[in-house]
Image 1 (tube, each protein chain N blue to C red):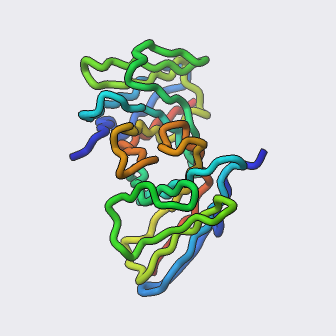
Image 2: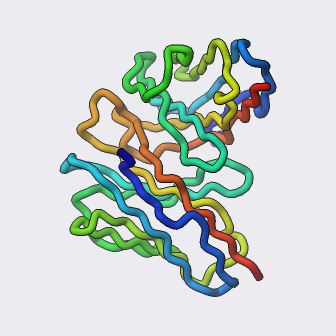
Length: 114
Length: 118
């Protein structure tokens, strides 16, 4: 069975640009969460979506937004990119609504903002 | 306030030595879950264990073992007879069942880099 997939693998953008990252959860999983991992730190929670609705939001500015589609895949959008947005963006899927079960992580998208 | 503290930044051991990773957490919830994840150089987080707050039994899985002590708010992880393939960053994480405004939120510690040399 396929695990969590993310695209693209790597991305280079310049300050002020917009970026869209994509995630496909494990088949049957309805919960998708997004995390940002800055080099040398632990992942930080950005969003959780369940059944196409936002169920959880971390402490990130409004430049960050996301959505979930009917097939449970998800997009993370970041507007007006800053140098500090350079990070590994991880997507995780889970079978539970509350996300308290094991979360399976994808390989991540490495975003570099120049 | 940091809810998960991993005080050890890096631990270096020689192959076959045991290594223990410390994790201290903070929560007011009575129902919560603790996790350990491994992040090899490839970057993908690999799930190792999930433990709920009502189950204080220690667990062993092969060379891995976990010691959960609610009295000290700790959930430590030991690798016995370490191998070079164990080299990775290990993260401890907390999920609070009462955090209904942030479902799915795993709160990670800063991670401990384990370096195993032959």
